[in-house]
Image 1 (spheres, rainbow, N blue to C red):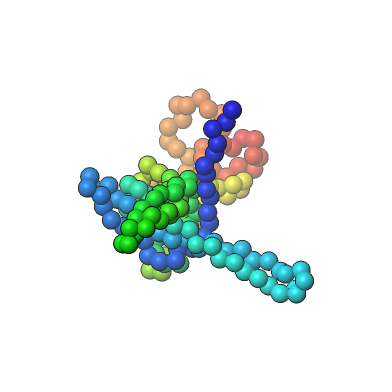
Image 2: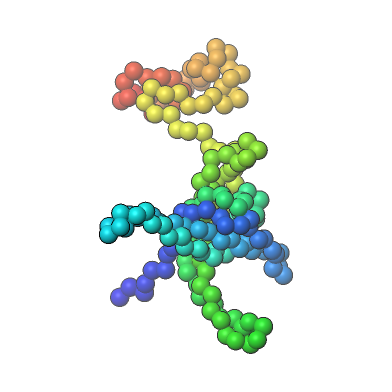
Length: 183
């Protein structure tokens, strides 16, 4: 018999800047609130309706540091995690319960921040890249040249000098007329 699944996936916008703090051992903890909205048309009145739901999200360790550094109010994010309900006492001694999402995956969905710096994408236990990954080239498309390719004699499309491999395919970066002969 299955033990159950506790999985949450959210795509929404931050309601405020992340609040980052550090525990006694130096581990980062970030708290964010995410708004998700759904809209529909009321069948009886033909009126557009919208409902916004707010979610508390807790992020730990390196992912929390990334959230604190790159996210801001209004940022669009993809969050994956699990639900956790915890019990606590308020100032009057009354027991309260809070349900929150413990994030283990975070993807920043905004392409570029206001100052033009690309925002990296990050997941659990993965450092944020310094710049976004280049787009993959498809059929009849060239991948973006790297600095090393730009310095090769003959330009970025020149074939590599070393022909000692036995792979019978065209090198990556060369345009191919038939897809069967390309990598």
